[in-house]
Amino acid sequence: MSSDNSTQDPYFQKLFAERIGGENYGKGTEIYKFEKIKRAKRNALDAHPNRQLLDFGIGENDAMADSAVREVMKQEVDLAENRGYADNGVAEYKQAAVRFMQRHFGVELSESQVNHCIGSKPAYAMLPACFINPGDITMMTVPGYPVAGTHTRYYGGEVYRLPLLAENDFLPDLDSIPDDIYARTKMLVINYPNSPTGRLAPQSFFEKVVKLAKEKQFIVVHDAAHILLTFDGKPTSFLQTPGALDVGVEVHSMSKGYDMIGWRMGFVAGNERIVSAFSDVKDNSDSGQFIATQKAAAAALDDDSIPQRINDKYRRRMEKLVAVLKEVGFDCQMPGGSYFLYTPSPTGCEGGESFAAAEDATRYLIEDLGIVTVPWDDAGAYLRFSVTYVAGSEAEEDALMEETKKRLTAAKLTFA
Image (cartoon, rainbow, N blue to C red; front, top):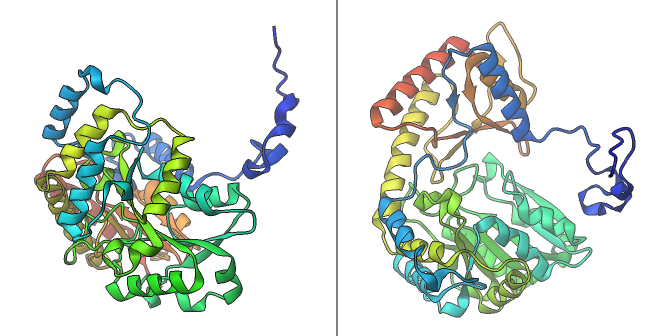
């Protein structure tokens, strides 16, 4: 019978890999941002049990997948032919992805230029394995989704951060990157519609990225998770750019545009050799998503009415939120896309608290006002509001907006 002596480290403490902290793993006192938010929410609920929590911090769709998609899943789950390992995917989903790319963006692909992923997150974990050796660089925009950077470091690589600033219209300043950084760069990860800024990339930016990738010799990974939640004009794929198929891939998600958050489905599309490398790494990392799930997702990709309804809902909610926040003093405007609104953080309250960082403002909003947001202090002090709050009708949306305006008005926030 083994014993657990809590005052001593286990024998394997010194065996943890340096990539996750080495022998100091589990001993850190730093609290992850979203854990801080969870704790503040618990404190707010304990202190004000009868006050409604207005949660704009949730970063996932609030609705179930479309009933037609769920019906396909119900049928496919009972078929014996779907019981086995999917490995690198089934033809039905790849073919649906090919049709989707042609229909929405005019991008002609073959099945060999597409492979599924178990949600987009694993794709960003696996792509660095295809390219990064110790000392290599992945360039990433910040604020942003960190997974490709985390795995770059796991392989001994480095991350070069490209801040997204209002003065650059939330595009990375590619001209400011030193030549010695470009010389070691293997990957550039970009994301438009951008999360969390909500900005779109003009075609000229994508063209510049393609030109630089060829000149400096790195590959491009475009995160297209929010592409179907484009509000300003038609959705634009990086792969529409002349030459893009020579330099990179685009990663699509079924989560945002299809209400399929927990289904864990997406696809990597683009340069055939890069997709092949991803497939080889994937083949040694997982055995594929459940075939019935892939077939249900294929049915979703073929039904353009689904993302249109989702886009309409989040556009409506975003318009309401922007109007309310502007009325109480926030400097914001309708984003080009995504279900996130990224706006400069308040600096304090009239005659009361001052906030040194967005994280301080977030804590105040949650604990004092019962309003949940997400702070970003990576490139200036900003708050992220999400319109994925739970509301079953437009009347409930309007009531939530009225309550939001009431609380924020009473707070008398100040903005430097």
